Length: 318
Image (cartoon, rainbow, N blue to C red; front, side, top):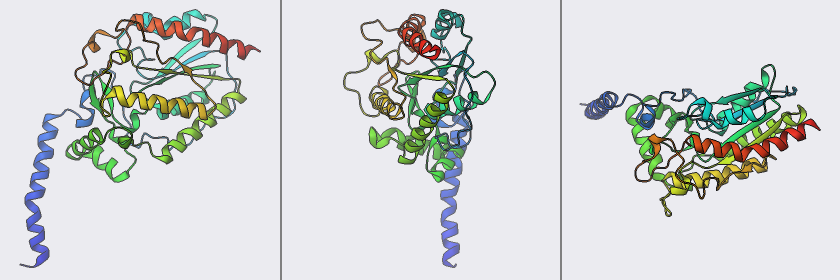
């Protein structure tokens, strides 16, 4: 038997093993293993089967704000876990009745997704005059692990390496291996925000600010920690949300500031308060963190943002 044939036949058992593992995983998971934590999320993010990073072109151009208010963000701005009447966006819309308000929020959105969402909104008629932009501690989730109900998850379509991205998004087996590597790489070394992605994010933020300034539109980003932040373990491991979210929020604060969009700093908002989270997130398990505020938590956010919005709207009227 020739050498090529021997190699081919020797690979058959390995191929059978890989295919068998793939079948077993597909029967055991209703979705990709790294997204399994989201399977019971009724408004689960609809991940695009393309890289989620900032590798896209902005399309918005000089326009003119129509006087309204836009709340931009992720599941917190979307009001996950609380009724509409109790959401901070509802409270703040009622506080400025002369200004039409809208919410543009996508559960699971990261900063680059939000940039894209805002860019597309500015192309449509009657763009807002004030954009109240939630910058959450997990908004780099498109590049690394994130947490839902205390369980880790990871978006394979955000993987910057094309080969790894295709494998992790196509095969349950490779997804499981990729997810294991991402989960255990830890800390800054586990970050998959490449220098190219950082540069793209900064460039997009600067471009949006330039368009907004020319259009009499005010961008008002604000830094927000998870509602259960004060109940984190004092010495979390690098792979736990209570550690990497702090690193991420500091990074986001820096890049928004560098872009000329110094955010309102609401870090420490939850200090001195009881656990203000939705009931399903009261117990998050070891290493988990409660993300979503309850009705009282939304009231606290509204109270903190109100004076900053008031000041921003006064500036627009000058």
